[in-house]
Amino acid sequence: MKNIPKDGLAGLKENYASDAASGFIVFLLALPLSLGIAKASDFPPIMGLLTAIIGGIVVSLFSGSRLTIKGPAAGLIVIVAGAVAEFGGGEQGWHLALGAMVVAGLVQILFGVFKLGKLMDFFPLSAVHGMLAAIGLIIIGKQIPVFLDVNPILAKGKEPLELFASIPEFIANWDPKATLIGAISLVIMMGWPYIKNPLIKKVPAPLVVLAIAIPAELLMDFQITEPKYALVHIGNLVDNIKFNASFEGFAQTGTFIKFVIMFALVGTLESLLTVKAMDMLDPYKRKSDANKDLIATGIGNTLVAFLGGLPMISEVARSSANIANGAKTRWANFFHGFFILVFVLLAAHLIELIPNTALAAMLITVGIKLTHPKEFIHTLEKGKEQLLIFLVTIIFTLGVDLLVGIGAGILTEILVNLFNGKPLKAIFSAPTEVSFTDDAYLVEISDAAVFTNYLGIKRKLEAIPSGFNVTIDLSKTHLVDHSVMENFEHFKHDYERGGGTVTLVGLDSHKSLSGHKAAAMKRKK
Image (cartoon, rainbow, N blue to C red; front, side, top):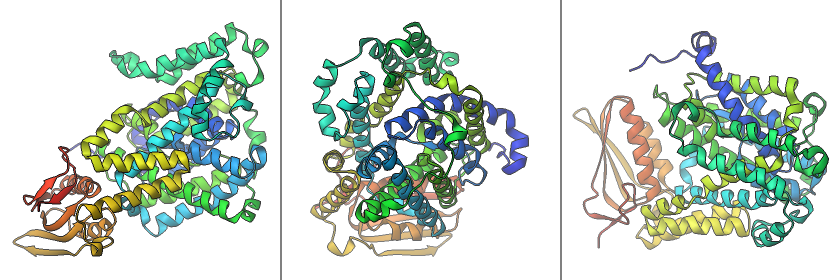
């Protein structure tokens, strides 16, 4: 086992070189993405950088995860832009949306205080992935008119499906010069993962995009020949920092509460999923404190919302890059925020040379990753019923909104589980007996082990001391759904990292609903 890096100031002293180097590379990745996410969210672009600065410099000091990078996320664009629009749009919509974000940040703190990080397990995984795929489609739809550099008035106020229907109109009004820069940027973003050379691969693709897009824009003299909306405009950071949140939106009670729930729920889900994923990638096999991390992120979100920034989460692409570039501790997140702050204070004028079509290309790439055809194929491999849940979530998210979409996905999973033999009495509870004999634990689960009752099962599993042989007996169940099979795999991974063993037995009398290793298991008739 490798020597675990120290934490706190001792960790800074021990690992400042590797953490500063990784933080600098992540800063190069985060700078253009934070600008693009803010612009796509109908927030002032500089507020995306404010979120990354606070997520790095402030939140890193007391976060519960060592290697995640905190900042604005493409996955929240849909909610943020929706809040701005429903609160009246423009500057007024921005101020009122911030009020809902402040309250959502406080709710997120309470989630952590009351140790509700475990609530993530209540959401079926196919519905969560369906929600992310729908967000990917919406991001693509919103960025197509920006990518084609059409007048923003043509896209204003249009719902996701209307944006896709308007593509012919956008193409009829496109700007060839600006779109050429966007197209080259998109090719770079999509092609970069296929480059084999390890040295070239270390350069972040967004940095390469900027290195080409800015000189191309200067060569074509966009500041004279193109409309104002072709370039990024950010203004001065110091002039923009003040208490920007307004709570007058509370007068629209239903809208206010809806967006508080959506900011808190989706932001928390995305953060927890990233923390779990990064723990799996951590070369030192450290386990994050999810609830402590939620408190830290909630504090960051409350502060950022008061000042006018976007909501932050533990962001998956930047966190993965952080680990890949040799980060050791939370200080890498600190350095990423610090470098952004220095750049904004000393070189803000360079940001205003970035063509918006280049930023749109970066966000379209994010959208494609979220809704890539392989996501549909992987979901089908887990079972036809999982694809149904996935598709229902996408359709309702696109047609109505995120909250209805995730609700429809949950309801579909419940109905699918009932159809597959889950007893009604097992919807929210599963009889789970834990016994200890001969230095081994036996966990016997009856009726059904499904996402709606997994929290009770998980509570008993987490109460088992580390270092023992644990057997989970599922012979008395009628159904074990895909989400629980995945969660058993996560439990096995975490428990065996602590020196114990976990064995699943009792599924010989069940049939798998697909060939996937974590497919739902249904008792044979």
